[in-house]
Amino acid sequence: MSEEKKGLKPWVKLVIVLAVIGVLLVIANHFGIFDLLKEGTLKDRVLKLDAFFQSMGPWAPAAFIGIWIVACILLLPGLPIAIVGGLIFGAVWGTVWSTVGANVGAALAFLIGRYAARDMVEGWVHKRPMLRKIDEGVKKQGWRMLMITRLVPIFPFNIQNYVYGLTNIPFRTYLLVTLPCMIPGTIAFNFAAGSAREVILSGGQPEAIKRTLIYLGIAAVFFVLLSLIPGWVKKKYAADDLIEAD
View 1 (cartoon, rainbow, N blue to C red):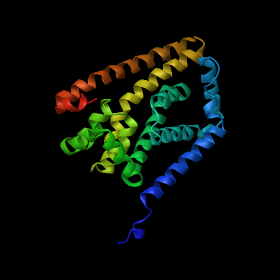
View 2 (cartoon, rainbow, N blue to C red):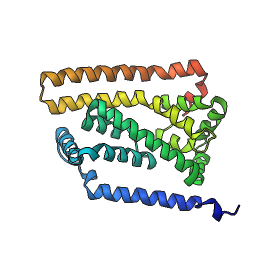
View 3 (cartoon, one colour):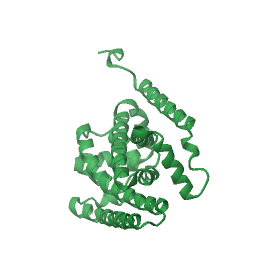
View 4 (cartoon, rainbow, N blue to C red):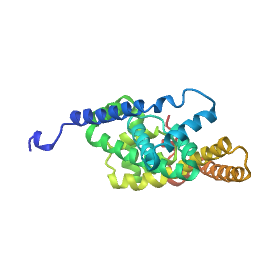
């Protein structure tokens, strides 16, 4: 079969993806998203963000999920976005929308790495031999390697998404393992941020204080869980060489 009949060439796909991302960034800048966090106290910034998303009505979650997707594709850090989710939507809904956005973004980055930008991702792996451990780990551990790297912060989350596209791990397996493994960290950071929202916006009302303590307790439980996971993984799957990779 000729190259033309196989569909678009990889570089054409990459240009299309980058063009879409560029349009999204222009739209975000037009609506002043990047200016919301520049001035004022912490409370002022939270209020401005809250008002911005509230003005979108039922489209607010979709906009936040879109921000997550763009961040995953552009390799932007996800932690600040998770915190913003907890501050704006509260602990519970912040967790829900962050989970959706991060997983959709991770899935799209995987597909881009596998089909649209394979040469670019292979270049990253060539320049950073440590990333080869992902492919080696998949060959040795299978889906367990994906679980290990999701639960233990060995490699940057957003780079992982692309590099896994180069491995032979099936897309369905990638989705089924990624979702549950990302939930503990998402809960921990969103509930911590949700507790901060209660403190910042409540004015010290008793009900808000009660919710703050509950959210902090839940966040603490999951932070402790996350601190114990590396040791459990090392013992369960003999993954010392992977976890200690720098």
